[in-house]
Length: 114
Image 1 (cartoon, one colour):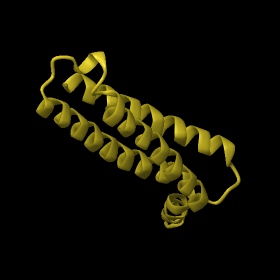
Image 2 (cartoon, helix red, strand yellow; image 1 turned 45 degrees about the horizontal axis):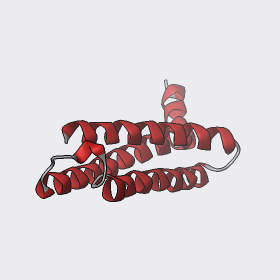
Image 3 (cartoon, helix red, strand yellow; image 1 turned 45 degrees about the vertical axis):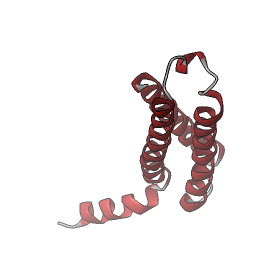
């Protein structure tokens, strides 16, 4: 069960990183909030696909053979929790990366002061 949850976490982290790279490459001139919105949409689509996979495909999978009903439900809930947490962290880091206008003026203003 733990291996499935860790694998789901790794897949979600890879998806958020790939989404951040794709949004940054496809929308280089868009405003930061617009890119963050597209990033949120991409992360939500990937996260929902991972959760759907855990809910629909895991019960009939070879991975869950011999698991009790409680273990299967715990794995599904753990996958949902991991997807939500890593999706939120990925969104936050992606927002910071895709909206450099929020952080750079403050840094520039601090450097100008004697």
